[in-house]
Image 1 (cartoon, rainbow, N blue to C red):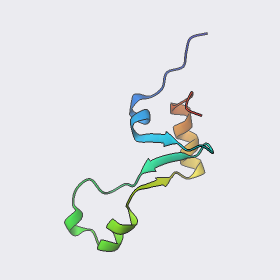
Image 2: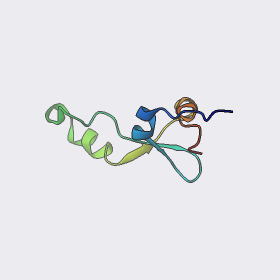
Image 3: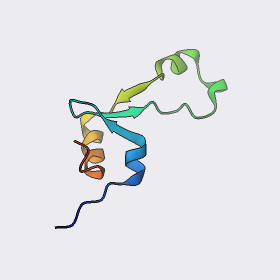
Length: 66
């Protein structure tokens, strides 16, 4: 049986936590910070965990990262 392929774009964007959840960087912080509120910038620091519905999709892209 051949190996399954991991999506290269997914392995660059997502990582797994020890409990199997999908960790992702906060969205909306690449450019245009001047028009964002300070509260948005503050709340969008660091990383977040994907919802279960979205995590199910991402886990199909990374079959060996469990």
